[in-house]
Structure formats: C-alpha cells, structure tokens
Length: 247
Image 1 (cartoon, rainbow, N blue to C red):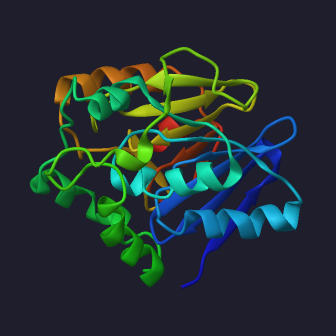
Image 2 (cartoon, rainbow, N blue to C red):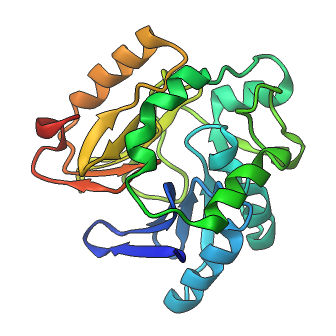
C-alpha cells in the first residue's frame, strides 16, 4: 500500500496516512501547519503534497511526544526553517523535569481493532520501528530528545500557531502530555491519540497511563459538538454528532 492522501477541502485539512499513522496538514493563511509528522520519512511525503498545492509549511506541531508522532518532525522543521511546537508537558520530558509514562503492552493490545482498520503499509511499519532512535518516547527507555531541541510550548487554551481558529486542548490520559486541537467554526477535532477510530466509529482510547485523567478528558471532549473527528490512528469519522455512535 502506498501513501494515502485524503483532501478534506470543506474543513481545510489534508490527511497523509501510512497504515494507521496519520499526519495532517491544516491550511493556514498562506501556508500549512503540519500535525504529527511521526514517520522518519514524513518530510518526503509532505513535500510531494506541497508541490502539488504550491504551498509552504508554516509550522510543525505534535499532539504528544510518542515517537510515532514526532520522529519526522525535526527534519521537517529544519528543512522548511519553521518552528517546532510541542505540548508543555513534552518539553518537561526534554529538560528532564518530568519523566514520560507510556501505556503498558496490555493496554496497547486493546486497540487491535484500529490496527486492522487499514491495509498494512510496509514503509509505515519500518518508520514505526525506526522512529524511536530519532526522537520521542514509547519504548520504555525514556525520552530521546536531542533532535527536538528548541521546540516551543503548546499550552491549553492557546491558539494553534499558524492555524487561525484552532485551539490547543490538553487532554491527558493516553499519556500525560496528550493534546488535541479544536476548530469550533467547522466543528473539527484533531484528537491525537485521545480518540481513535475503528469500524467507522469514534473510540476513546483504552490505551492509557491514567484512567482518571482519561475519564476527565473524555468528559471535556464529549462536551464539544464534533462533526469531523480526525484521529491520530484510524480513519476520520464524520457525522452530525460523532459521539452518538461510539465504540
């Protein structure tokens, strides 16, 4: 399976996917904000799409510091000479003031329906295996952060840099640094790994490090009138109320 490019023109977003790993391009005023460039080769995938649209990258952001969400981000930001933005908690992992927690394998195993939602892409699988050596956490070895130096913070409630109308939401549970991005005008939620999808339905992830925090984040997100769910893993879900038919 090759790279999947899905243009969601009505909400100003392009989805790039290799297997279950989604990278999103949010259209800004004169450039795109790239969200979750998690594969080491994400820069090449993004470059091909930008060439078609004759557009530039305005910023690179991530929903959390797992390697499959940040491994391609340093190269992408460097090549386009733009800022890299990471959640505030992730920056605590980088400066050593906090230690990242990652879900146990027993928790990871619970999301198997999402893993089967799209055909396997060998490039994506290789990227998932190679990414932890570049940047991020998730292998139990702590944070690999040298390539992420100089990243700027994303704080709860602030506007998403470079993407007018989008807001940063801190939604811990999957990890302590889990973050989502909300666009009230189009009722679009880019959920990171706080919400996945499987079988065409939204799914609050069971893959968590903190059940209490996850429950509070779920309550916060359910209060949003989401019509377009763009998950970190799995296919987008669209409907008048994506919470009406949950897994």
